[in-house]
Image (cartoon, rainbow, N blue to C red; front, side, top):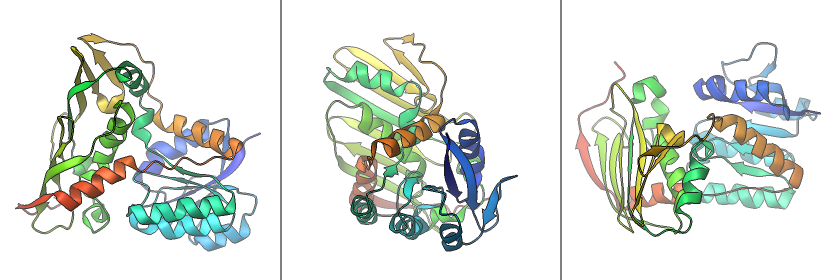
Length: 304
């Protein structure tokens, strides 16, 4: 029998990914939404989160699709109300607040799942298995996309806590931290800030172990979501955000890409097992890049 779940924050990512995944899932029944303006046809909608928690005690799970900055307060309320919580990426605005949520979930005996949807891309597990017994000689991330297409008019991404280009960059970092056979750390970074914005629009990051990353939110035309790895005389490329994998020049059949359906299947497993999954490795890299990064001011950014 499907379990009731509430979806909080009915914006673009919720409409594009979460709602279709929940509608098709045998594990979940979308029972309510919470949003200042967005709704889902046929589903009870609330504009007040406290009211939803009070009136819908039959909903044991909450999926939060809000921006990172307001997410902590909602997650804290849900966990204290004994609800299991699933967090969109990145799971919070700071490392400390996610650590606090993990402690709160443990104290209340409920599940907290900090999701990284790109880890569920079709080629990622194949890449991880291939690299597991190898020494990585070099790796490079090329993660360039058009913010105007993927976050149209969403000023919060350029406000403090919005993380700027590291919001999509966290997708690459979630893959990198999952497939590498040994951990790495940031050693230096150059961060490009539009003169009228508070978060970077581009970044070049160097990691230990001869690993680097080039992140840019100004890409037009074809989008670039690639990770190239050289290891033990072999080459591996993950492209299309991890959906495709090529090893030594041969494209492998890794099946259909089902990132968000797989996230919700994993949430069902975690809840049934009474477990949490809180992995902050990608956020650590972002925090370190923002700490070590040399700031460069670039042209103003506007949505027009």
